Length: 242
Image (cartoon, rainbow, N blue to C red; front, side, top):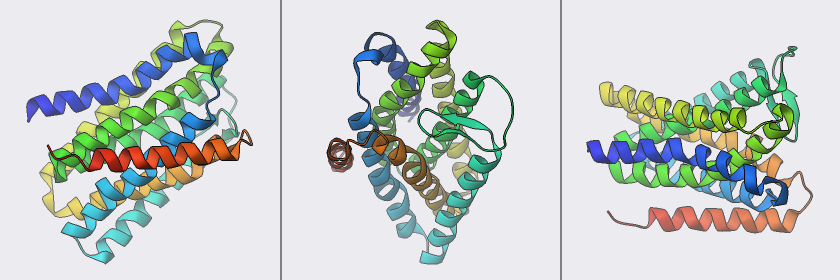
């Protein structure tokens, strides 16, 4: 069990970090439409296969409905109240005057924290589901890390700070993984709600944040193909028995 947890922690920390590292040499030559849509496909399918459907196995439809709605509402409140910056949509949340780099860091954390928590909840339900979801999240964190790091390189004029943002966001995701795992292991009775909550939060981030960024370039066919491949990859990962 300990080895598997360390493996999951390495995946969650490494995804965004690797994306930040790749953004420096590849950023100016890379169109992120396909990659972001791929990430959205992975997240959308993972929300159901690793969270919502398992929640239905261990809880009632009412539990799952309340959990999904809670995840949606919490993420909606966070997004509307916490000031943050998106690459395409610009600033959201309460209007404040501060450096864009700080707002972009908050934007990354709003994406990553529910993902880490969801992996922790999924791991509490099943080590196999948690591992598969961690692999999927690490895959989709790579393009997300690149998308965030590229403008940060321009804003800061250097590469160290943007790369540190990737590392910090990965560590924060790992921290929330441990939090989700601890909460579910400590209070088993809330597992159905926790799974559904994580699924709802992931659905919100995917539909409200990832897909609009993916389709913003206007290359709808490329984005749709990316979504299809991401969905199939997640289903393929979920088909493994280990």
